Length: 549
Image (tube, rainbow, N blue to C red; front, side, top):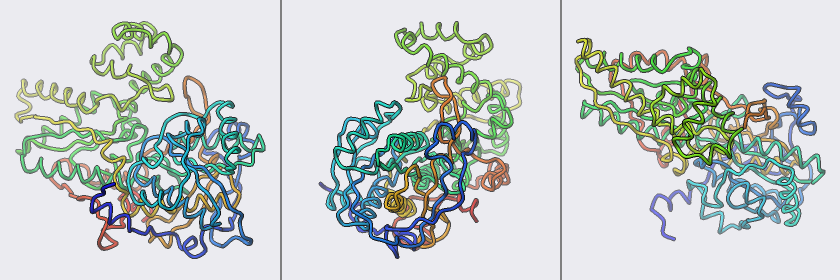
């Protein structure tokens, strides 16, 4: 297969490891910390996970006392793609082989469904080598099937036992690792002898805590988006006649929007968590944007950049309540609703919603209403990413500016262009940071398995330091759990990490945003650098640098 010069050069890159793993290999002894508890709803989570609740955090800093027998393990990629997934598998493969040369790794195809349907490939050196340091999940594909029923779990156990597999590694985000937690508990309950370990993946950056400083892929994706925003800012500052409204990935949290703002210094960045905290309305947001447009126009600047997180509407109090009502209504009436034509769907929802919510729904533009009623995601929820929030904001800002112009309060020209940066960042070749971090996560996962641990998430910390100073270990998956509404019912899930409004990165943004709004202090981060000085090539996200000093 033909490859580009960059791919050939990246194939030769050797990812860096924490010193403990580089020195001793992956056959490590786990140093146990204190017992843990879930982030919330402790009694409920403990009752649901009696065999895996309260496990200690572990770190690896010493070799195992005795040799470890060969291990047969299976791995899946679950959920949306994120840069570095291939290196997690490469690190896992190399780590297992380092534990014992007779170890084997199977890749189940198409995500969790591959585990159920028993569709797999067996990795060897040549297979793995083709995918080292590459983007995408095409090595085995991914999927969003959920492992939810005992029938599913029993099939997984039966398929693994038939192959002699004693460990499963689930590479995914919060929902995928929620599945990993539930599967781990079931495997212990059934005395199956199968270990389950997770790895933290999501470009949205919303799977983080004290022990998981970053989810993999976030660094690369935000750098890809940062380059594109930088390009557009230079174009805007050159043409001086367009307002660019850029929607960015991040339904449940605004980490990407905040990171890109700190990287590029645009004129306006909306942060969903702040909107929710201040109980802002859509009208208020539009007025705030229009005020900046008006102020810049008065200074002779009919151009600018607006960053919009894709989940913005879900954080508006009224819209949030409406979406919650829609999720419950559509989950309870799925078959009836799906059988209706578009106009009938609108009528059905309008009649079934509570009066206040029905009025809020009716007041939305038709295109937004239809997008709210489009196919739901695998959890039965409205697919907020399909809502063209950036277009809605442009229309509303334009209408308000026309009103102001008619009153003589605005004399500028408003010409807007909309963008959505999403898929562009999901399968990029991983940055040096993500290549190293992902390889270390996979290698650490093999150490967790070698130590006989289950129900854990691979953890690599101290990420603002050089890779040799990173700390490898694992945290119990139950430690990240709470109870949330899904399909109209309360279910245990890993809690998403939102932007902290009292955190250092947001405070840094707030301290500078008025200046960025008025002036043209655009930063150009440029493309990802793979070769060159470490301070350029190995640098991690601005957010984590500010957080961790």
